[in-house]
Length: 108
Ligand SMILES: N=c1c2ncn([C@@H]3O[C@H](COP(=O)(O)OP(=O)(O)OP(=O)(O)O)[C@@H](O)[C@H]3O)c2ncn1[C@@H]1O[C@H](COP(=O)(O)O)[C@@H](O)[C@H]1O
Image (cartoon, rainbow, N blue to C red):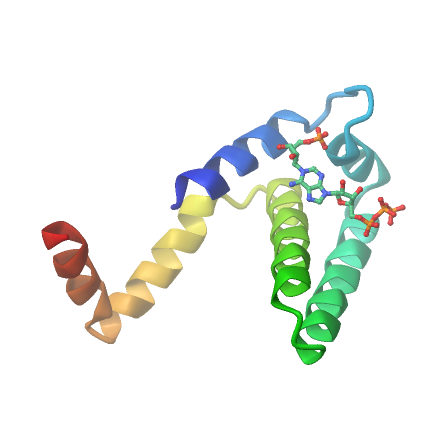
C-alpha cells in the first residue's frame, strides 16, 4: 500500500485508546463507531457535491477528508491497509492488470 496511506493509518491507529490534546482522531475514537460512520457519510456527500460543481481543488480536499475518515473507520474495525491491498491486487490479477502494472513499474 502507498506509503502516505500506510503512514497516516499508522498514526491513526496509534491514537486508539489514547487521549492526545487537540487530536481530532482521538475525539473520533472517543465518540465511537456511530460518529465515525456519520463522518464517512458526510464526507462522501461533500465529495459528490464538489465533483458535481467541477471544482477539482475542492474535490481533492474532500476526497482527502473521506480517505482520512475511512482510515479511521478501518482502524476502529481492525482492518489493515494490507487487507485492502490483497483484495485490490487479487482483482487486478484476475483481470491480468497486476502483472502489466508491475512490468511497467519495474521498467520505468
Ligand atoms: N488527515 C487528517 C485529517 N483530514 C481531515 N481531518 C479532520 O477532519 C475534520 C473534518 O472537518 P469537518 O468540518 O467535517 O468536521 P468538524 O466540524 O471539525 O468536526 P465534527 O464536529 O463534525 O466532528 C477536520 O477537523 C479536520 O481537521 C483530519 N484530521 C487529522 N488528519 C491526520 O491524522 C493524523 C493524526 O492527527 P490528530 O487527529 O491531530 O491526532 C495527522 O497525520 C493528521 O494530519
